[in-house]
Length: 338
Ligand code: CUA
Image (cartoon, helix red, strand yellow):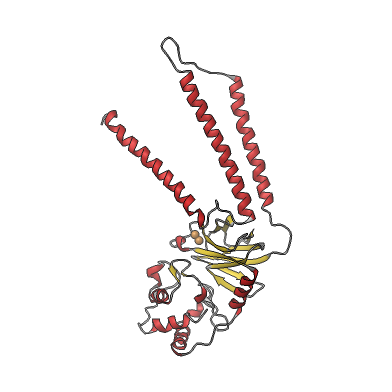
């Protein structure tokens, strides 16, 4: 292949690379509405985003300055008829300048980074404490003072400082709420701490940000920042014991007990107290099944119970090969756990 015939292929390649970079940036900006470090909604995320934009601005100025100087030199000092191209070999002044300038810029970035780290320390006071425990592949949220164990959803009062004690029961995961708090690894055997204060009420997407096995993608959670009244109401609802089942739901409860579901799941006020899977005390009030893999509707719950591995292969919940009559009874029981 000659150079001439290869050139269009090259151009197409460069165009495709440029387009994919543009698309990646575009989709990042487009997704900024839901949850992104570019739409900070807490003190910590705000100072971190400020530092990010400052570094982007400096890098942009350097890029424009260096490329500008390069193109200027290429044109102004090029070889012309009757003139050799100019060379600047061995210019001590230039070499000193381009050594000192980056050192100065990196020094400024270093000082601002340390300032941001110090600003992001937990301020004094009496914050709300929540434990976040990473499991393959879902998040457990414990509210020790309130006696609540939740999953998939982290409810917090808006404007209040929340301290999250982070740990993992199996492998290394990473706790990340893009709009509220930068990533922090959850490491087995270690207790690590982060904090944030959601400044506006609303839902914020959270996820595991460290590859942790087959279903890493479906290790999502949602942060629900609520007014103090709504938060208090949620706490109260989560503290309620489950209702006593009747009819088909009662049949489902008997199946639940007969199938030893309670060795993996917990339901407050019953003998069921496992911790392999999420607590089911208020499972029907959650927005998803399987940490994001399915919307939490009775139909989806039936499909999940019939074959969890079809939706989340590798998850700890096996296919119990329930009979067709058992699934509706189990579903009827589980939907009462609001
Ligand atoms: Cu847990 Cu990725």
